[in-house]
Amino acid sequence: MATEPSGKSNGAGPVEPAASADTPPQPRFELITQYIRDLSFENFAAQKYITGQIDQQLSVDLNIDAKTRAENRFEVILKLSVSAKRDKESVFLLEVDYGGQFLIENIPDDQLHPMLMVECPRLLFPFLRQLARNLTAEGGFPPLNIENIDFLRLYKQRLAQSSG
Image 1: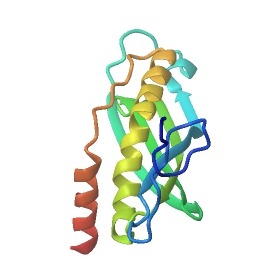
Image 2: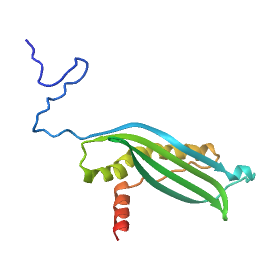
Image 3: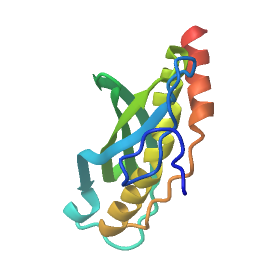
């Protein structure tokens, strides 16, 4: 005769271990959804009929914004701005706000801010990177390949700047 392990089961999925009074609740970190919140691609080269090889100087800026949306629900937005110029003349401007909504539970208060500013952006960044690559290519330019970002190092730098 088979016995069922202790814990909860509805018969449709894995068995959840029984919670005891001594066991703290397990941390939970989940990406609920991700999306383009705002997008603008201005192709000045096409508007001005600039043709031929365009050697461009790129300026890339990335900012992170995190907000509480409901209890244990957070929105993290990566704000990317890429400006391309040729001899001080604008070639294109790409601005993307790429967001994600996260469920974060049972995380100590001192770990919540790093979670929002390091781990959430780390999950969203590959999708933003691919979007920027595709948009520049569809705009008639070489695909933009944004280097990987060390969000932990960036976080530590910003903490040092704010405390210094």
